[in-house]
Image 1 (tube, rainbow, N blue to C red):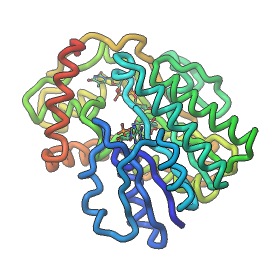
Image 2: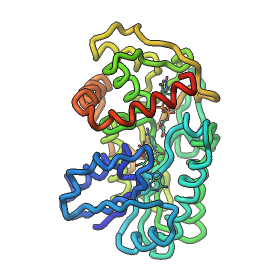
Image 3: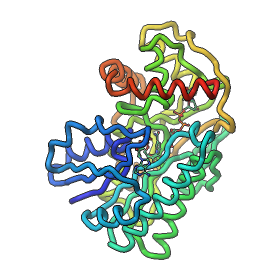
Image 4: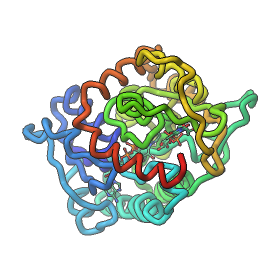
Length: 333
Ligand code: NAD
Ligand code: TDX
């Protein structure tokens, strides 16, 4: 099996490539990545010496390049995206380009070459829930995205569904909740707070911190993607989540405690405009149909290992940290 991974220099994509190379000895991987501010080639530098891995620096909107790479492989797993809500509120334009035009470009290539395609998406396409809502998101929840980021991801999902129906493209979609783990960009909530503490800066909580996210370890997400690739039904959507609901205040307090600080020693900063209140996934379809279950069931242990990874790998995040905190300072957050 030869696969094309897009966005493999990003957080989830690089963890996916590592998992595939480690556990699928007869698979080879091409990683197409533009190396935007969010991509880091160092994440897979060691793998570059493996003949089963090839890095291609390029844009998923480049139709000729995408066409030639898709022609070479059996399947495409599409992770590449502009992925940060705060950035999308500041400048939506690259989100429209990469998330919509990039997905369209890939779909046209997989249609032409009749290749298997898996689309990585987010639970944010469903909008948000009230804190006391008894229901969670499931595969039939109506789309109701809130931000430029989530609306472009929702649009990309719709393109995939239309290409399946109209052109019989062999595609599946997964919508996952918030991931945590190693190699996540320091602009995101958990790595930002860990690296703040390493640098002697107080963690920053948006608003009151009551917003709930449904945390899943990145490896559990990627193992679910492998199950969908192996056994998922074409045209189907699978929600991925590990019953990991926590509010932001709880997460920040746990990071402070794990790093030996007073759990109350954080700062409230101005809230994100339109801030989604709660995400929560019902992953029954994935569990019952494909037999997937998460391996990281103790959030505290997964978070502790993540803290240790950022402490031990400062060279990986140092350059991005400075640029990120300059950006947040301009936003007053
Ligand atoms: P990330 O921002 O860490 O990585 C994105 C990668 O895509 C980067 O390496 C970047 O260089 C690359 N990229 C961006 N534009 C590109 C382009 N035009 N052409 C080629 N490469 C390009 O993102 P992530 O957190 O790893 O997310 C990966 C995917 O998972 C995204 O589709 C995201 O919507 C989805 N997702 C993320 C989460 C999460 O919690 N991080 C949860 C659910 C779904
Ligand atoms: O400094 C911060 N303080 C804070 O309180 C940051 C950066 C965030 N937050 C809050 C905002 C959110 O409620 O923490 C929560 C998580 O924020 P992010 O890490 O920015 O993630 P979120 O906006 O929930 O989106 C993430 O999960 C779904 C990913 O970035 C998306 O790519 C994915 O689709």
